[in-house]
Image 1 (cartoon, rainbow, N blue to C red):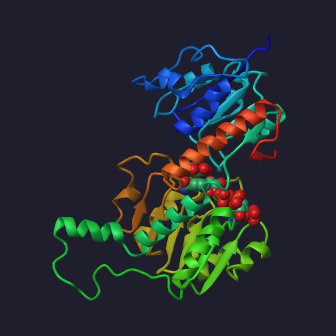
Image 2 (cartoon, rainbow, N blue to C red; image 1 turned 135 degrees about the vertical axis):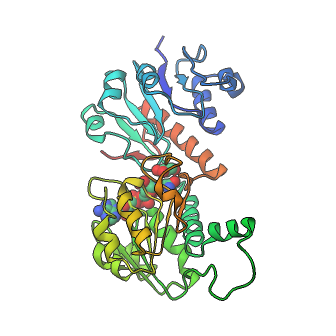
Image 3 (cartoon, rainbow, N blue to C red; image 1 turned 120 degrees about the horizontal axis):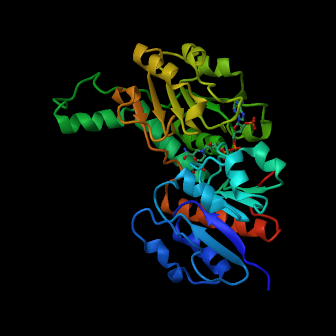
Length: 353
Ligand code: NDP
Ligand code: DGY
């Protein structure tokens, strides 16, 4: 009889995704009793006796799996379903051993995966593009509007008595109509953001990236420019690129110094694309008008972080893709990727290494 494929899941994931794994494992979702466990919820042994197909061990908690438990949990597994908060490096791969064949991440971003090490070991990788594009673009637009029209600051004034009367210049911000928007990374999410911003009356779209993308840019008549020109000419800058060695720290002192004093900076990609000290200085000195960040370094941002004290900085806890439907679809896709990879089949979304 063939041995079941052993899988480690590093977190409690939406039920729909777990159901896919459960079915592959040959037990009903209701049979996954340990999901109801309280506390850290470590499942010390495989969840249940299963069919030949799949045997799932899960860190059944809302909180990240401790490194020690990750190293132990992955040992001898063929499949790993992980999150963007799990650093999958050589140490994890060594702990898994040669049995590990597939890594499926519940994210489109893959900067947490040591791809060189993964490739060297011949491991296949699945990820979740497309299904979160709309939700993330929607959140990016919401963050942009909240930041440029000072929504959080204004709502706080209502609660604290700062709203004394209607005043001509009080709580004024910057509007999108007639503006120039610069997009760093006109990929899936960057394009979806531009598509949503266009009806607000944006006059010009600029974008930057590793190369021009005339086909993607045509819909917005977007102009490919250098990072410097984008910084100089944009009224709103939206960062939607991937985190790579090239983009790490890309938005730094030099970049912010080129921006207009009236410009607004939005980042929904990864925190490390921005040099946060330089951003802080730019916000405090009035070099730029405001910033909205869905992603930071580190995550979570410590509650005493200087950026949190600024009125012109809106910070969200990495909720770009956080709609129930999107997270559920991501979980199903991640499970499907994992199972297809384990069966040696074509994955719905495989990262080509
Ligand atoms: P895509 O691969 O479609 O887009 C990534 C973009 O990054 C590409 O357009 C690419 O441009 C660009 N890029 C790469 N290198 C550079 C560079 N040096 N300068 C400027 N741009 C560059 O990915 P998605 O749009 O699907 O996702 C983008 C990122 O958004 C993810 O990697 C993830 O980190 C983040 N994300 C964040 C979420 C959140 O919750 N806040 C949710 C989902 C994603 P080119 O092709 O020219 O290289
Ligand atoms: C991703 O998928 O990369 C996001 O950061 C979370 O959805």
